[in-house]
Image 1: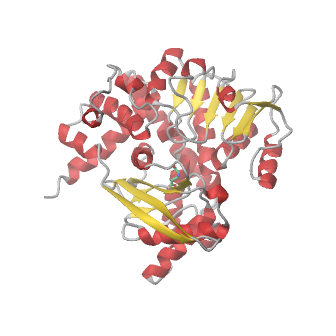
Image 2: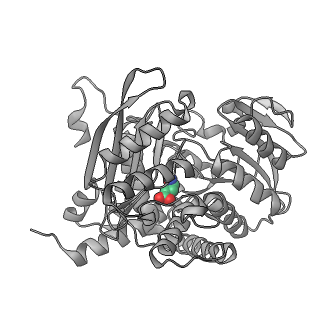
Image 3: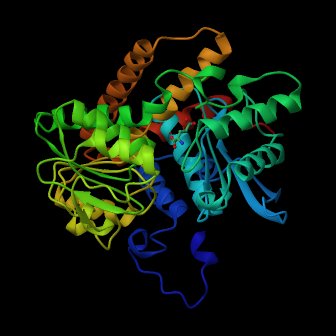
Length: 434
Ligand code: GLU
């Protein structure tokens, strides 16, 4: 189908997964989906249903800027699939947000929730804006107007947002307040990743990074490598990367390089992760960090190491650099950091990839715990949250590994197979409403 939309003079390479629109996230998701669907021998009807999002809402967001001028932003919310439960997925604020990216991220949320077997579907939201240049007041007005724009689809039983790139607890507090004002009473289960004081879960902020650490620990054990002394490179030092680095360090790994959008820092004897985190707390970014030699964002990915943890945005490992990746394990803290074409190259090199929909599922898993706590009005200790998170991550890793051995496929294909079969099963049981 997608081919029909191409300009007629476009030459389609036979190995189109590898060369056609490599950096379009929706195509990257679809290439993996198609492969798993083929191996599962998915019924044609189900295949058609699962290739399409259920609903996509696009809203204009007029905002009075601090200057007194009105600016109009575009907001998107894509509900990909709700067969297994309410749609679940974060909201990102970024100047490069696109419709295809939001659709892909919503599909990934669907597969992610199914891989870890939590009773949610998948969704994602994005606002095209540059939050780094906006004031707190402007961000609040964008959040509230975007929430009002998508309010018809939001709700604890229908669609539950969470933080994602450039959004945080504060944004979730505004969203929850706006929704609650509209419906006339406080509804804390409408979003997760909230401040603890208003119903957020203990351990939620650390959950994605903690999940990455657990997945890495399982992968190292599978490869027969001890945690102690393993060298780790972390690309992206936001909520996911910094926490993963801290927890891997605590488990005995040596974090040899870190980076963010301002550049990379390398130290053969190990980066002082606590110092790097303190630097970001005081200066917003790693810029000016004196705990290592500077290194470019491209070169950091190609360092000799045991574990490479991309924890920022999509498409950092593509057909252009995959052959130069030297890590034994790639743990995908970000969503979609590896292109479909790069998968094959990493496979050939024998790199063990823990795919995004498994590796970074710790965040949405604790979001699920938060939603459960909100709905029951009974709050868990941090220890209980972390224990239950560990159990889900360890079991999910084992299930995916078992499937990958059984079907002789890599971990990514195995996790898509597991997810798609779970979602397809529910569709089959529910049938098509006519
Ligand atoms: N934004 C996170 C993700 O991509 C968390 C989503 C959620 O908790 O709903 O997994």
